[in-house]
Image (cartoon, rainbow, N blue to C red; front, side):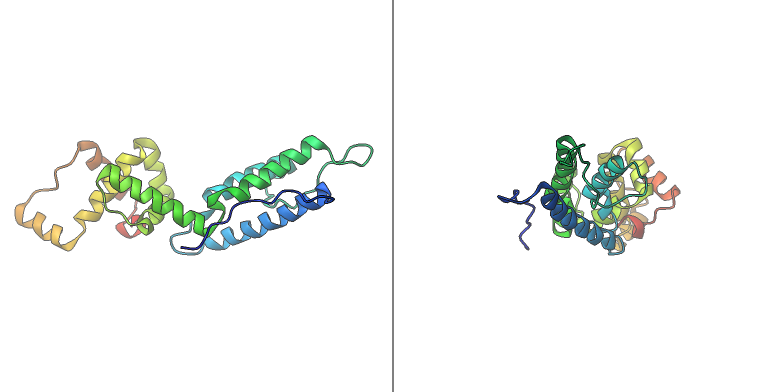
Length: 204
């Protein structure tokens, strides 16, 4: 597995605060462009939901521009031309938080999905792959239903749909003329998933 490097170097002796901030901002902006490109890559279409989303929030707050999405912004100056300390630290901390966030990289997002999949499978007795859950998490319809019922119930419902769609289970259900024993809530959510127009391919 590729080594995930999220550490941010300290300012060097003799380096100006402006130069230090601009270098980190340039690195952060490049990483943001990479996340934007991931939006068109299978399993990573939700790449801009995590560290990227938080970074954009801070950038727009600093600039008062609802369309801004880059850290390449000027530092405020005092009347004597020196860098405003409060402004500097606010912007620097925002850049550092983004660069140090695991979800600011493709490798970090992959690792997050794998850890979440392992936890979900253990807690809910499911058998999702991280790729399946990545597809699920990026669906707006699934996210909306998940907010209403909770992620655990939602995932159990998705797992129900997934397992019922397996050919052997379809044949078994037809032969026995009964459904998998499950809670009424999970059944209800499974039906809502279908009514929302989310197909098995969408979710899985």
